[in-house]
Image (cartoon, rainbow over all chains, first blue to last red; front, side, top):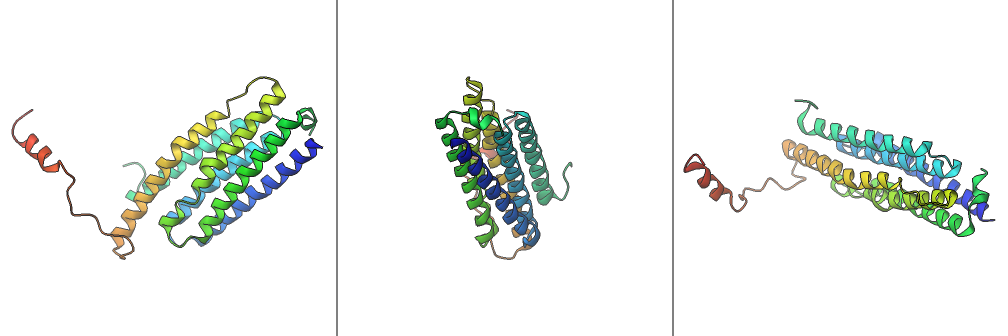
Amino acid sequence: MTAAILLWSLTVAQAMLVAAMGCNTYRLIRGPRAQDRVLCLDAMYVNAMLLALTIGIRTGSSVYFEAALIIAVLGFASSVALAKFLMRGEVIE
Amino acid sequence: MTHAADLPAWAALLTAFFVLLGAGLTLTGAIGTLRFRSFFERVHAPTLGTSWGTGAIVLASIVCFSALGSRPVVHELLIGAFITVTTPVTLMLLARAALYRERAEGSGAVPPRSTLRPPGAEALQDGTSDGGR
């Protein structure tokens, strides 16, 4: 019984995270300015990381934890590089 | 899905609660990016997902794997700490870049740069001009 509750809540949570990524994708495509697009790309990185964590809980393996860590690191680096590009027009001066 | 049956009932219910809480907060933040009008309001919305959205799902993962392994498993705290440290840095850089771009265009959407000098600026200049110290 509790296993079924856990499975269903994981499914609902993954659907919610995918819906959140859908909202971010809409803003990424329609965003009026470049900074809106960068903001939503950063939010999509976080959502993808959370989705990897929930898949890890579902399968019970710790491989997805490492994938989530790598996604978090790459998301930070790319968002900082894009923000720097918006500010200066180039990344490495 | 064989390990869900091995979980004790309290761990399964706690994991389900935290996963739903985190995903719901993340979805709320994503809807906020759709509904807010200006960029400087929108920049607040995804922080729901990066604060308690991440925290709750990390807690769910800790509870699940600790109950499965019968020992405390806390390496997920690494993700929580990393997200907590990096999100303000990212969003502060992005907001300052957006402010710079709005001011460079002169559209009047943001207040102009303050002409007041910070207190102590003159004193610092006087201190540096009087000698090679």
